[in-house]
Amino acid sequence: MSTTTIFVPRETSAISLGADEVADKIDAWIRKSGSKISLVRNGSWGMCWLEPMVEVQTAKGRIAYGPVSPDDIESLIESDFVSGGKHALRLGPTKDIDWLARQQRWTFSRCGLTDPLSIDDYRSNGGFAGIEKAIAGGADAVLETVKASGLRGRGGAGFPTGIKWQTVASAKGDQKYIACNADEGDSGTFSDRMLMEGDPLTLIEGMAIAGFAVGASKGYVYLRSEYPLARKVFSQALSLAREHGLLGKDILGSGFDFDIDLHIGGGSYVCGEETAMLESLEGKAGVIRFKPPLPAIEGLFGKPTVVNNVITLASVPEIVASGGGAYAEYGPGRSKGTLAFQLAGNIKRGGLVELAFGATLRQLIDDFGGGTASGRPVRAVQVGGPLGAYFPESLLDTPLDYEKFSALGGMVGHGGIVVFDDTVDMGAQARFAMEFCAIESCGKCTPCRIGSVRGVEVIDRILGNENREANLALLSELCDTMVDGSLCAMGGLTPYPVRSALKYFPEDFESTAGDRR
Image 1 (cartoon, rainbow, N blue to C red):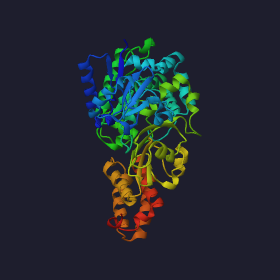
Image 2: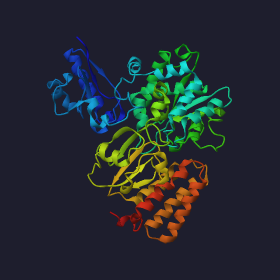
Image 3: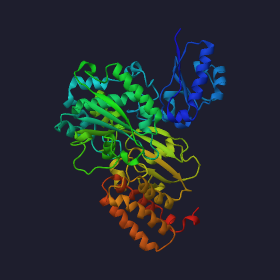
Image 4: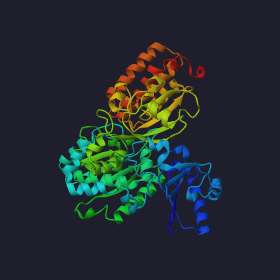
């Protein structure tokens, strides 16, 4: 008699909605009944509005039920859900759920599918094919494959990954490093966390491939302190990888040595900037560095360093395994491949959607997100975190493409999409952008440190109808100074949400805050 497998996600959003309690109740029933049932805590498929989503492996594939509460377990058992029985919460075959069926899953192909801490499960679903092919083909072949893929940094800057890697590979140094930025601090973003909780071995493999390609023997993951579950799962994954010879000395008998340390961040937003992160990794205050020198030449401890974020590195194993051309087939122009877009804010169906570049905001918000949670019209959408521009409803048909967003004064960033309905006060949102910068600035440069404080004061005067025209002109000049004079993106991008709010929602700056809505 074969063993039935039940899957209950161990992922932060699912746990916050009761997944642990659901798993405990199912486990208690299994023990009491003596049934040959295996309970697996998998990652999330990204359908947050259906969490906790319970799946059962049947002869006809995996059948999903959700959202499941502990109180639903008894009726599920009575309906014979372990055989895919009918129930009000039955969603049907997981693979046929429309939300998933319409995606192009590349980086997240295993997230939700596999046991995150099973080497065998990972390998049987294509894991380690990338590192094996990399070692067989050599470092130069890996570099050319990554270049051919068109992969660009998914942390926000969009710099070509292959060029960065080639720079580090060509740099002279007795020691080189791979630094993974997992300090996911942008509002509305959770793809790094979801991958590290649901498919951590993909990141480990991607970092090992990067190390092999550039000649680095040491990697660091800089993880934000607010992700305790990701820390726990990833630490366990590191131990598993070492036990199976996939990290450490002589990986896969190749003579290549590479290991990874997990470093917990200090809770500073600015440490998401690559040089501030390197300073923090070195045990210093998270303050940005002057550039040049670039981290690729003089990075961690003064050595050549690849700095990429989680999604960039996790995209690499399948790129190497399938070839750069396969990845480059996705997306228009220079925006190649896929991105894990994250729907948050006032949205009916929030979650993670991996699509090729070129999809529009309207498609994501309406077709996947189901519109606003409030049922009111969409008024504004912020893409790219708290420093991203606000787009009005009239721009929702803009393709998600690095160049097209840049042309409109916006940025795709890390793929976070925060939706606001028609009750939002955009004057308050513009003020928040300046206030956020004032709080989070590392203080190294004057335009960011002082400009953001003055920005809050100027916006307050505008909202109070105090010398309105003069203060609008002053705010414009201040934004120019911050863009042109700031040492990093913290101050340089803060004007993006401010200017977009002024441009597209001028009416929200025409009266005092107390008179609006």
